[in-house]
Image (cartoon, rainbow, N blue to C red; front, side, top):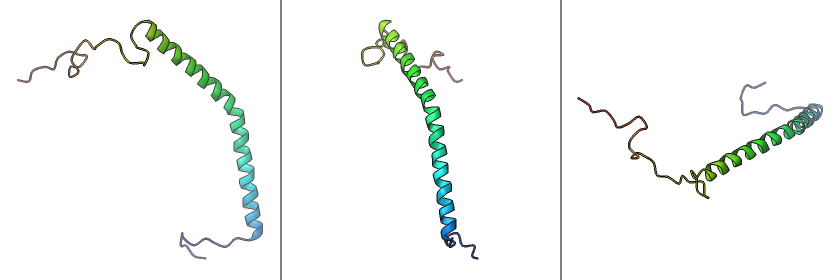
Length: 91
């Protein structure tokens, strides 16, 4: 038996069939899990979508966003200035 990782060991037809059956069972198991989980994921995604749409609508109603979702008011400070005020002078 070689230890070269590029050499694929020969397997018997029975071993190949057993491996194929295991793969088929694993795929079926994953499909069952996906079918069980998918309704909950879809429900959560719909709730998130509704909440985000409502938040955007409220921001538009308040006049903070335009129809494209961009801010309607200019910022109250220059772009280089942080929210904490102007930078301190170095001594």
